[in-house]
Length: 246
Ligand SMILES: C[S@@+](CC[C@H](N)C(=O)[O-])C[C@H]1O[C@@H](n2cnc3c(N)ncnc32)[C@H](O)[C@@H]1O
Image 1 (spheres, rainbow, N blue to C red):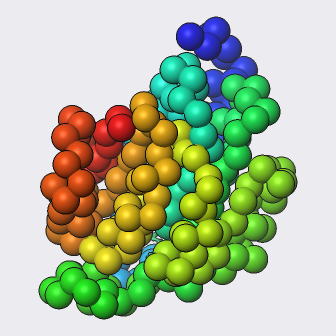
Image 2: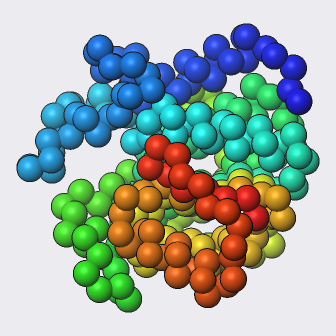
């Protein structure tokens, strides 16, 4: 059990408030209820805020808290492996994970950041996934993401980028081992591909977090994968995310 450390907790809390832009845009919301998507003009699918004010992550504070709790859990249980997010957009979760390595004094784990840096591809296999109708494909360039991480002073060789579409790029990780993986790629095909390539690399006792449990394609891809591979570990949900321990 990590010893209580108010300075560590204050640093991580400030990281969470900053990567969501809560400190800038939070208004009267509590950090727990604040969600950057509340700034989204749904009918026109346009951000109401200037591009430079866009947050580094779409996650809520609760979802960021879940990452920290899972991070602490695998660390305390000594689950071997690194951390990965597949579907990073502007890199806010990567910033949080890299900050957690410093905050908890962990010298021997790395953070992998996998993304096309060209947005979500249209489904090739799944039919009728509403994600295919989205206008915003959540594109952020590798250079922009690197700059975001650099601004926090956290861009170093313990952040490993895996650029490319998952169907091609994730094969390169076949010799890696992960303790915590976060899959956030929205569409049926993309979530399925990330599970096919990454889940076998998750250590026993490791945790997988699935974003977008409200998206039918994402949910179906996960349920189908679990059924196909006989995964019966208890699936829990929290603030729109699903997760289980392998
Ligand atoms: C909703 S965004 C991720 C949000 C991010 N995790 C955050 O903290 O806000 C979805 C991301 O998944 C990526 N993505 C989706 N499908 C992909 C695929 N098949 N291969 C590579 N990247 C993919 C997109 O480029 C995009 O950056």
